[in-house]
Length: 208
View: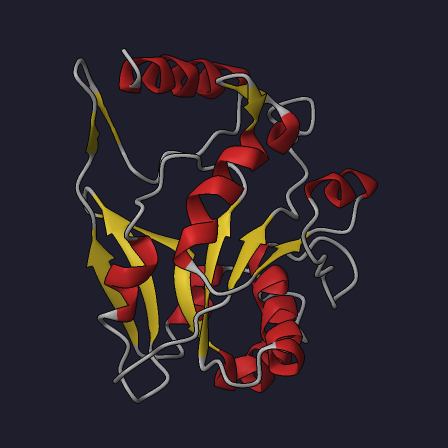
């Protein structure tokens, strides 16, 4: 299956409870965490949007795609918002890439490798590492938007892995990222101040 148009969506709808402050604005290597994510994903997609609705999001200059479902319904709500957004604004696209706003080290070939596994059966393609799947790093077929919207109509349906079980899902494994002195999971995400310290240490080791 040849895919030439993959838009991207950064998921930034979390509440940052464990960080204590808005984690996407936390400094890493001298600039906001969100800036690292934008820099990393931009070369991999044809267009990029941001799933967020708070005032801080305007500062990054991306089209904002707020949740279409009221309340904080988790990443599936952001994914649904992306599906509806790209239905209108990227009608030629069959899939779009999602990445979370709190993971700065994901692979530079993430989209390319996931695209290689797209099938013609509306399969969801997600990233994996060290035996764990990371569904928020995924290629989502826009054609399943109606099913996802119906699924989220039941407030008990919030778990992303439960939704994946409804559709063909393909996992693509990625190795750790190596620096001269250490390594880190490519999908390491930052939720706490301690994890931000870990990320800063690895970031410095990459440029050592």
